[in-house]
Image (cartoon, each protein chain N blue to C red):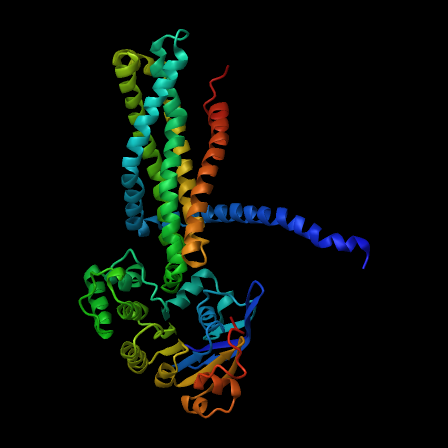
Length: 253
Length: 274
């Protein structure tokens, strides 16, 4: 099981300081939810975990290895232990669902076409999407695309899955289906999960622990019970969904 | 504050106006060469990516044939008409085939094919990769531990390098046929005379130089499409900008490289001495 440690991580894009000294630990096997307003750098933080972005300052340690200092070969070896579900699913448009989900298996294993098809069908069954293997992403609904993204993320049996806004843009029922999937994967496969979201219902349901990001820093860490009873004014404003309070709307955009 | 300092912002703006495009230009030139080096380094992995390469060869090659047919037939035809107009009363019409053949094989075939195919292919590559970039598909590929340079860039660049010479040879043949047809129908030069002229001063070196030029232009087209696609940011507008930059930069690079290639090929390598 994978552990992730962020030490004083800073990241800027031009004049915009997105992360301003993030300190965060993801424990092996837990489901950590990272919450916060849009634009506070949640997705940016997630991308640092797998070396898609490199911090300007600070270190990200995955199982003790500094991600920013890994060679490309070592980084790819590390990434094979991860899966990631993207906000917009990020399915490869020109490939069928079967090829999308089976791509990593084709590239990294010696399995035959029949074996890959069997694994892909198994993963599609896990996300409740049997029989869509020959469809193209354009033929699927938003919820189906997200679930295919799930299937692709778990195709190689990763030790850690990163979820970027897994329920955003979905109806409440589909959102719950996705939440149940996250919990099922976490319970059945015993994997470490990091979920970035601003959907409170989702956070309360799936989280072992919740971290709240505000103005590029982690301002709260605790269990769902802790966050519900927090007296931090920023946390309270966020979970109560009030426009008035210490968080000024647009301040972090 | 000294009086001179009041002029600093204007001076800075001046330096910025000149310096920023220069730096961008140098960054793009450097980035393109780094990408080219990246393709060469990964060539040993080409067998693993043969499926993508074949698909791209089909897309770039077979997909461009209708465009090449129309362009080259009319280019050959207009070459014959223009040459006949300039020959009248001064040069025997037996040389019509010579001029059409030479101009098509040396210049019109490779350059015009590269320009029209380049517009189509570099735009298509930039739009496809640009869309993949802004919709995080390239990030998704990275997470799956698949190298986008190997999986996306190398097949496109290699396919362009292979298919441009093929398309150029097709274009050369069709342009000569177009010229011969017009010579026969509207200028009154028989096919036998045209072919007789075509065979005068025909050198295999000319065909080889045309093919070498076409392969170089193929590399430029593939690289410009991939480089601009990979640098895309900012949604639909960004994809549009990347596509436009890919077409413009590939056309400009083709024309500039054409001059330097011509200088090297015809003044050095295939120079027959005067």
